[in-house]
Image 1 (tube, rainbow, N blue to C red):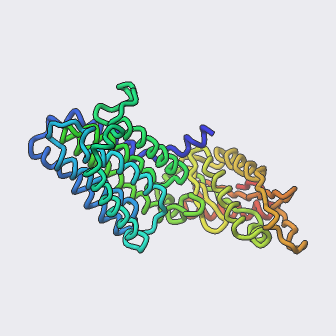
Image 2 (image 1 turned 180 degrees about the horizontal axis):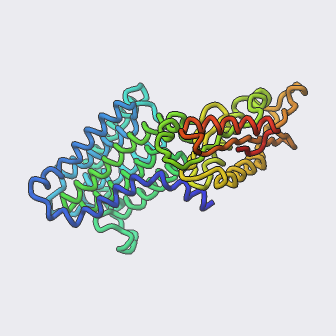
Image 3 (image 1 turned 90 degrees about the horizontal axis):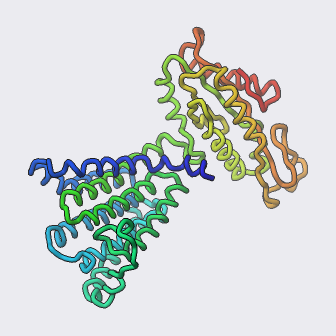
Length: 410
């Protein structure tokens, strides 16, 4: 369980890196010249405009909504709160944003992407506008009656509660953060991870509101995290296979040019996959491909897995030779052959002839297993280019199939 969790944590790498950089820059803020400090105060607007442009260009409505939320909150804090001597837990503006922004970001994380200006995208934008109107009315005319609840003290220790953050908002926001983080871990997409990072940046910015420069720094970091999440998501769309999560054929072609002078390449193919699809249906076939891809992701020796096309896959091993990687490939082959997938009765073919599983798949008590064949080759004096090695690995793959499948050949 902990191993699977560790494999999913890298999705947070970019947000965490930007937040760490922002924290490291805090001690240097007083040293900035006056003109740089003024530029910093306007940086959230500049990054938000650029992020909004990218969101619209790539048809990403969710980060666009999150950017609007963050920049509106920054403008409101900068206009009505910064530089004023007041108790922030007793400010309706402060309380409204520290409650509503985490809620809306969690709701955005729950949404599926439907574009920026599609009917669904416009409906979501309208919802935020209406919500803002209701929040303005509620906090403007009913704030006094609810302030005992919004500014309640739960007796949390000072190390847990930020200096300025009201404790009810902290508890509520923590729930929203856990939900957003769980979605990011489950879906493994940059957008959800970006929303999670932007929420943390918002929290820190809210607690640094007494320092305009620090507040601007973390507001900029939140907007930058969202902007980069759009770029990363668009990159994944171009260079990741959507179904399996592996790198795509396009990514493989680019990676081949940077392999250096020592490398091995493996070609993998699911045995009798067409017959499997005809027998169990394409939905089950897709599940098989996802399972094979998940096993390939665990490959060692620095291997990088790609979906070559259809039921074919490729693994690149930079800095390795055939003898180095064969044990890893055998581990993958064995793990896939030993894996059992349950088949529901409704998916089983009624025709007994069609129900016979071809060689390369087994069926026992409502479960099936598949096998793969693997061919591997490495760079040599004869095979001098990645294309040559790839062709040699493909020939070795067919050698494995001709010798009976479910084996590794070189």
